[in-house]
Length: 303
Image 1 (cartoon, one colour):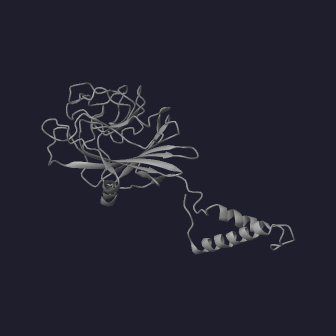
Image 2: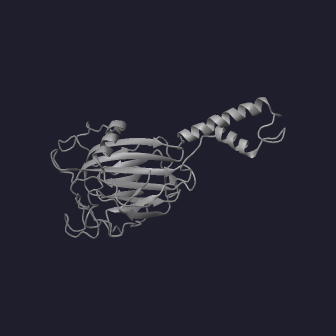
Image 3: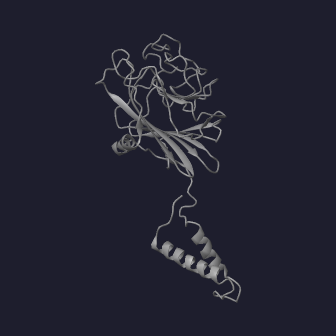
């Protein structure tokens, strides 16, 4: 709720307060009208005093065309105000980075539905670049199939996670869970290899239609490999992942949504052979139950 703190609004509130006090103490006195009545203008003023004066009352969450690249200021804000998840004690291949792991996403009880189920307490970030609704029981799975677990795939591939920060924002009209991931392109990466940083926001309207949004902002670094998909025949070895498992042929892109039974393929082939470009953003949006998802590239949410 935005409160108008301008001088004109303050003057109106003082006038309204004065009129209200006078009217309460002298209910039968004449106030700019016949004895025993109160003009509508005074009633309006009293109502304004009792309720904060709002501006932009018609504000609505919208998807805006254009790119919201991930800036150093945005990253610093999450580092300063957010919380880092510590997984440095998890060792594999001699590195203190997370490979084939799940991180529970704390969201302060924000309701977030995915195909009719509220996953407030069971949303995970999988180190192979996937937002999963419910945990993956077999963490060795590299390429998530249509029936592995309900998921939003964001470059699903055999990645290695470097850092994970999260930040919860609660407002009267919306709630946001933000998490910042820094990752290596491939799980064999060494500590001095290139990393990639993305900001992902889960946005839920608390009023009105209670729509849901997933916004992804890409940093200015070089673009990582897109990952596995049926459209990729040569990287790294045909239609098999790094474990030698067959890649789901209904998965047209490693940027995708599965309801746990079938792939929706909302991105089409947009990111099948190349990842989102640096300094760009894109959005998935749905109804309140998360049963219908739409993809919009080169876009962001206006909150």
